[in-house]
Length: 510
Image (cartoon, rainbow, N blue to C red):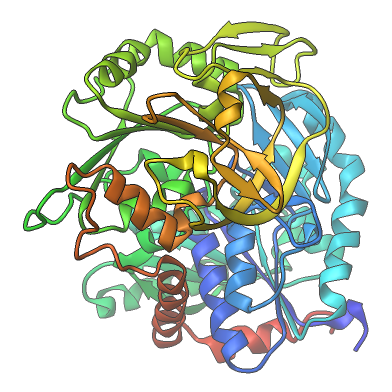
């Protein structure tokens, strides 16, 4: 079969955050279980939740989850264009896994015209060894003011001749109007790729929506491929981007009130928070109450741990942290005997200073850190991108020595200083991290740290006054993700016309 005729199907949305990423992940698992070689693909993604790929680059975290669902290694070609916002008007541009520039929105709009060949090239790489390619659009094709340089929706569909279905989120209301309105706004040329739709996040009696399918068909001729009812366990899977943090419910589940000691972990919600799925394994523990501290809120005085997460722009988020008064809260927390851990950008913030002489993440300059670790960071050199594994060192006390960890590094900057003498992680022979003399302040560059079950259990036990593991802390986090993907696939098998979707995918190139 030629690359031009490999079955492929594209899911585009009537808007952002309608559930495309999870639908593609579930479909990847469902079709892979049928014995098909499935590959996920997203032409353009905008997210600071990134994953390091098996071929040494970076892609959106959602595509990494979709690859996992399909049971295949990750590749930079699954998400050839990744935009990582650094400010309200600008983003770092990653093409086929590597940073090529930082651009303001208007400059990127002009740049996009030159990126389509790279996007098509990556799609062909993915299609070469696939029985089915499942493609996720970005935003909505109804943004017709951007159509001239589009590479994420209909511009891509036209470039590779792929059928499209729309995903509408009924939970928002107005789903009929959003589907019919999107169809009405598209040009005749673009409408030829649009073959049907799926309703997502339906609650209640599905039969009540049946008359609407006739209205949609009579109005714009689109076929329904099913109604995906609301799936309450979406929180068990990594979120695509920071939109999830704005929703009530994400990381707002309280710990088990019957647990002997519910650990309270406070996480300042930074504007440019990155790779926040580091928090998922902690939030999944029954005896952990993970609190996202929103702007204007105070970090609770009775929390057991303050966790500073990754950031796409460390100095800007550090300034924001101080503007909120969180630096005062964190220093007071430490004086009371509390613990603090920083990951990646959060690690950099814990030091004395952060320097960006070349303006890697924004305007050149320096910013004073929290001073809880005797280290300094300089934003210079090549970006570090690698999957890695290792173990805790004898400098990890009070944590045990030799506890296994696995994860990835994805950062700019080098961090050095006296507290690096107490590097508490050995990652394939490379020492990482720093620890304060009192042992209550830890920082490291390893993302995914808490997904390592043994480390997470030991770390949480170290926060308890008696140092014991709780009865709930035997959870296998990675197994839980795969179980959730299987559950999602079962859910979609029951709700959607998967046979019809597969037949539609086979019409590509005909």
